[in-house]
Length: 163
Image (cartoon, rainbow, N blue to C red):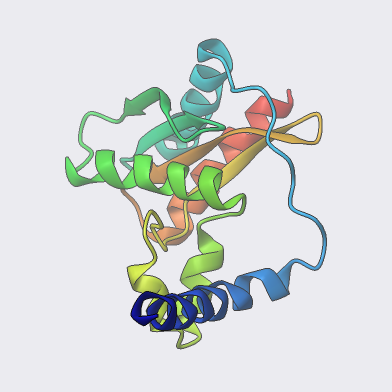
């Protein structure tokens, strides 16, 4: 009986924590598709790095498959070492939660600091799902610049997948 009393509050807490994000998207989530291949992942990462180079930013770019497993990683030579792990984390956040990592940053900026402890989430702009034929095939994560700069580079990566 003691265990069931603990489980109910945890279930309620989980629903309360995710509710603000769920309320933003009244539509069904995008389904997962077959995982992105290495060549497509390289194309995405290189486009993100090219955007950074064009703007004089040093970034790391990671591409994960639909299950959140690293497929490809690239970084500018002068990028801080910590950005490697952060870029992978942003990509995994977008793949796991099927949304841009910025969604979590926005919720936290709105005062919902409980999202800071959400397991597996890096609540910073720069992670975007990669959608092909209406299905999530992976995600790209970029880190090294400001959140907005990382977002610009990640968007360049997603645009490359569509070409």
